[in-house]
Length: 231
Image (cartoon, rainbow, N blue to C red; front, side, top):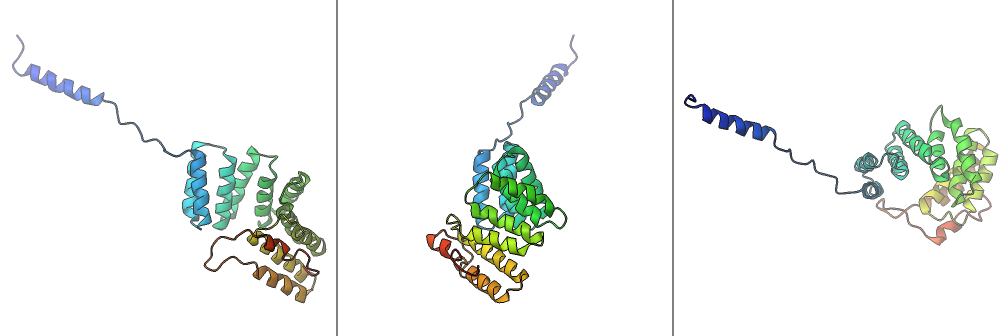
């Protein structure tokens, strides 16, 4: 004979076991692909929202480890945030994935040139990148010119900056203005103060629209400094 109340206890136990074995809800999956997270990060970067951009690039890399483009973009964002060591680390990871890519080598060289101790490591990177005949060549020549300035050769640096300005493909306002300022720095090291000031004025004339909006591409920009006897 079964003691009174035992069947009820068995039923309760069965219910508890059933609950314990129930399947947990599936974890939500990311609706965006690695490429879409990267594109979203670029959009945030262009609006100056660097912290949010960094998170998007990190999400892209979580979905696609070794995604070179996301690593480069993460490096750019960290550099914009002033995190030089972290930027170099991201560029180095991208360079390890795509060692033959001249653009990645250029970005890494650019960051290294800003490092107090590691800047000499930039030379083989930028010279190797230029050997692959990349376009627009002016971007890469500007990095080489900065290397020469750091090596204490402003005369040769000025020649390289002038070659960068002579590149008709270097049309974007912001980088062209940067090359002009670098040319001014080289002239300043050479003691040509008036000529340096002229380069700085030309660079100032290439500033983007008021309000901090993005720089624009215009064929007219390619003429600024291109045929200037000073810069």
